[in-house]
Amino acid sequence: MSAFNLSADQGRYRVRSPLAATLVVVIALPMTTPALALEADVRGLAGAPADNIVDILSDLDPESQATRERLDGVVRERTQQALQAYGYYGAALATNYPNERNERVIIDVEPGERTRITQLEIGVRGDAEQDESFDEALADNPLKEGDPLVHSRYDGFKSRLSTLALERGYFNSRFLQQRIEVRPWEESARIFLDMDSGTRYRFGHVHFHGSQIERERMNNLVPFAPNDPYLAGELAVLNQNLGQTNWFRGISVRPRINDDAQPAAPSVWWREATGRDTTAGPGQVLGGPGLQVARQITDSRPTVVPVDVELTPADRHQFEVGVGFATDVGPRTQFSWTMPWLNRYGHSLTNSFYLSAPEQRFSGEYAIPLANPLRDSYRVRYGLESVDNEDTESFESSVQVARHWEFSNGWIQDLYWQTTYEDFTQADQDDAVLLLYPGISWSRTRKRNATFPSWGDKQQLTLEWSDPSWGSDARFVRTTFNSQWIRTLGTENRFLGRLGGGAMATNTFDKVPPSLRFFAGGDQSIRGYSYESLSPENDDGELLGGQHMLTGSLEYQRHLTGDFWSATFVDTGDAFDEWWPEELKTGAGLGVRWISPVGPIRFDVAHPFDDEEDSWRLHFSIGPEF
Image (tube, rainbow, N blue to C red):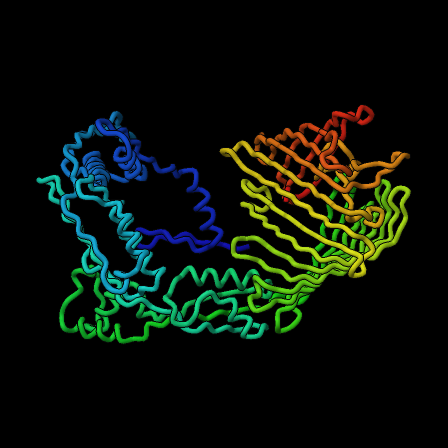
């Protein structure tokens, strides 16, 4: 058993056991009471100045002052500070405490005349004098002669200039003047703010450490060149570029700036000149022969900022398994194996296997980056796919060689040549074809919040051409397009729209395999109809697939509570042979959306207006809209 002693020593008690200390604390807990916060009621003044008084008094504990007189002195001092922040320097105050506990104070304010800015001298000198960003900042100055004095505007503008200097490489910048002269008897204020930016620093060389990729390709990711003016945003772009390659799992970008080139330069110069620190403001520090010598030393140092990049290579092999369910295909699973870098040139390889009841697919892509690894590459895509759905049975193998561009505006362009061999049965048609055809596609996806976007759109357009003159079994020109968008009104209303379709010109339709024919219906097409159940039919009612397709959808979602949303929608469209179709199939219904930890889950009940035998159909799917 552990014993403890409680002994007296000159009026103090010492606990000599951790257990005893714990007991003393536990016993003392019920005796403690929460601190009171002073409640202030401001009269005679409204708006931001009154709110500022309430805020500045909100953390004042009445019990922390021994007497009401001392409390009132603190209240008056803080109230005057709150008023002066908005230019009221001659305010008269009257205070009243309604009860003995002093937990509430009524403050009657006679604000008097408000101090206004009568003289304003703001300037920038040094290299920043020729910098457009500083010109814009000065033009956007919130301080104007004749305006009421609001200290937060002065502090905010001064902070903006300091931040701008840091962001744009003026590491020796300092304020020659930074003061406000207030004359309460005149209700006037004079503001003097003068910045000397000094010399603008420039980028030096970028030094990569730990990279497994050859130096030339790494240099192509750097958005600036040596001797370019320093800009902090360019370092962020470099970090982003390195991350987008997927070559690294650890990235650290650090500019190598000497400690004595930091923005707090006046104090540094003072230490160098005098050998001691100072807490005086820059306006008090400047001057003197010692400081002039120190400034010459500082200005003579190199104004170049090398950049150090520490990198940790990504894992050579990355695996991912996903499972899901949709009424279109039932349970589904996907396994992917990614090698983000295969060699020092940054080549990558991705393979995936997709499995569902109607479709089984193996696909892969080998990427060969070019001079700009983020924008230009060659892509070799390959795949095997088996389909058994409705009146379609097909086995397809394909290889595609593509030139891939990603433009700065977000658009992606692929120019490709594809070879496809497909053995298929479609209704009463049975064939095996070899297709050789070029194609070009453009696409762009934009969204905010990947899981459940509040704003976004997706565009896609593809054009393909096959002809027997170069050995293909079918002649066709085929195009597809798709446009989707998401918009939010306020925080409670979400709108979704979709328009998609395709068209084919051919005189050898019987040689076109099912993978290139058009079918409509399903969760992502026309709800109320089963997956790919809409298309032209033969005399036996079997689906043949169409030469054209058009689908559209409008959906309105309303926030219910928490992560739940309701949905109302209408879908329309069809697959057909002759443009324009005689009629379009239409379905409409209601749904619920749950933003689950694994992604949005959608449950819909849809009614097809022209199908009396199947008056309602349930649709269930997991995953984002696009």
